[in-house]
Image (cartoon, rainbow, N blue to C red; front, side, top):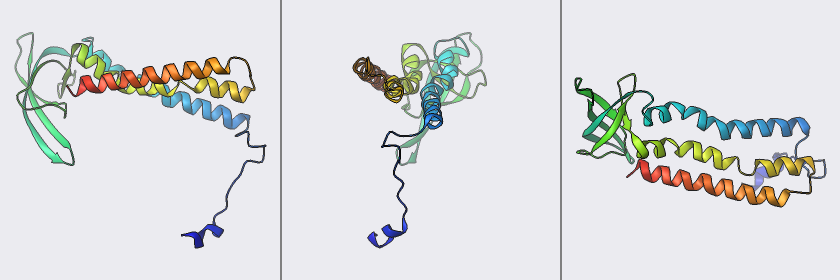
Length: 179
């Protein structure tokens, strides 16, 4: 492997190691914001479903879970609407077990049912929590690049708190989803 190292060109910053220029910094901040905010935007539909704002409330009974290998499962269930409509065959969460009965919301498309109530909301908040936690140290990075000396310790402390809160909420959401 070392015989190939002379062929590789190594790039080192020539601005005294201070990182990218102003345009590069702006692009990095925008990308960091997008990565942190996008999970929240993508979770809106699941949150609306879990809170009952969309979909049909009812009861989900898991009928079968097929082992697809490598820890993956395909679960199917029967959804019974609270309104007394016909029973609907749906796809269920792959973390389900045959015989499970739970409160659920049927998607407007009618093809799958997801847990409703607190469990569903916490599960839907898992990915946004990761994005939120990822934004924790962005203020510190912006302050560092701006050359601000005052308040950087507070930015680090805030970053630790935001990241820890995001990680804790993500763990709580995952426990809710898999319990």
